[in-house]
Length: 151
Image 1: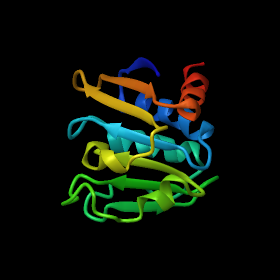
Image 2 (image 1 turned 30 degrees about the horizontal axis):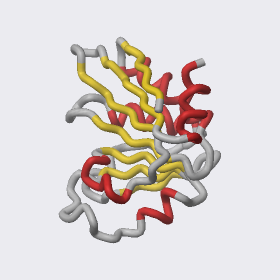
Image 3 (image 1 turned 135 degrees about the vertical axis):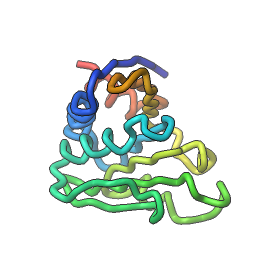
């Protein structure tokens, strides 16, 4: 397991960093996003979507649990904050191991269902525009992705 971090000084910098990740992801990659409200999870996902070539406007799926976008590969953007039961079977596996990349906001709500190998990203609010983005790889594929991203 490896961990590293980067500081961004504006939402645009966060999006550019995430765009780089979007260009690297492959089918079956799972990215979890943790951070307080307003930390920049959705901005991060917008950048990632841009890196995937998504043309539609990306916004938080807060009330729908998941939104799907077409890009180089499909993007499945989940916000699981409002789930009632962590063990409720909503068919997440078909997305985690499917034909696209899955981004999950508030992953602690479904931790028992998450794949072992995932790229864990935590965004900390450090000031008006400053964010600390911590990246943790939890398996072989996420480690490979993390190394490519760090270059």
